[in-house]
Amino acid sequence: MLKFYGYKGCGTCRKAKKFLDENGVAYEEIAIRETPPQRGEFETMLGAYDGELKRLFNTSGGDYKSMNMKDKLPGLCTEEACELLGSNGNLVKRPFLIGDGVALVGFKEDEWREALLS
Figure 1 (cartoon, rainbow, N blue to C red):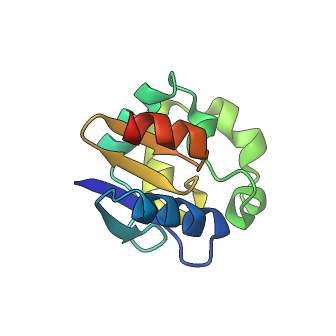
Figure 2: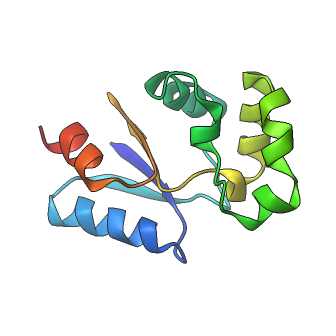
Figure 3: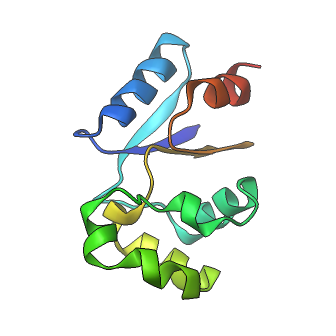
């Protein structure tokens, strides 16, 4: 089953859930702030996005800005970035959908449609 990491106050997460529900896609919903994805899930997601660490970060979030991640991120290795993301769910780009053969971060309907319904 797919794991859908999201945040109730996130409009993009609500749109993604609506898309999943309307298209009959089964998923387990997980609160991303309280239970961030695991290291292996970040590594899988990185594989889907050609190792682009920035894609996994919520660059518009308050924690990202207050921690000055814009300047710190380029100097982080993958291990450090995954550890940081796993310890602070607010830093993770959402929604974060992962499962057998599926790894999607952020909600772009066309991308999700192709990955899930094709």
